Length: 225
Image 1 (cartoon, rainbow, N blue to C red):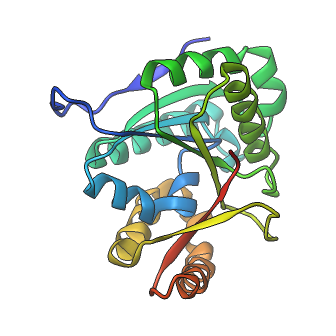
Image 2 (cartoon, rainbow, N blue to C red):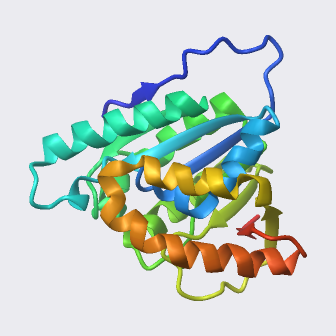
């Protein structure tokens, strides 16, 4: 299976910065779960590698898959390019990730990418998310790291989570970046029917997490390993 790789054209320094890897089922997941943290890391000069498992074809079931794919890839390419995020699309079928991951040996491809980029931390969608594709990405990531016998830190972020997880939680202050997070969510214009209903819940979630660390806004991550 072909891996489509969009690389930010900006010239990078000779000494590579700390690398953060984000794995998500759909190209907008991370904007909901960790958009503020992404902006914080970019401001700190960290390198971000984003791996998207699906083109998200089913987000517009009334539109032909190839048209939705083209729209979402173009949109993601523009957003990632503007931010300086290097993005891979694995091109799997939306809503069928569990079987597609096995069929296309994605675990092995994932191990290659992890060994290539050597991230200090990996962030992934939660295994408690109500969306099965989000759980599938989490599962294959954990398996890949276990087989690599890797000591890379692994954290999960929330998208459609409804309950608190029984895992150690860490909070990151995103107060200076909250408005940028919201702007990032809105940049995924093809997904506005999903994004806009989330804006109010995201506000209250960010405020609630901010109180945990005595700041205005924060994002929560569960440490898996």
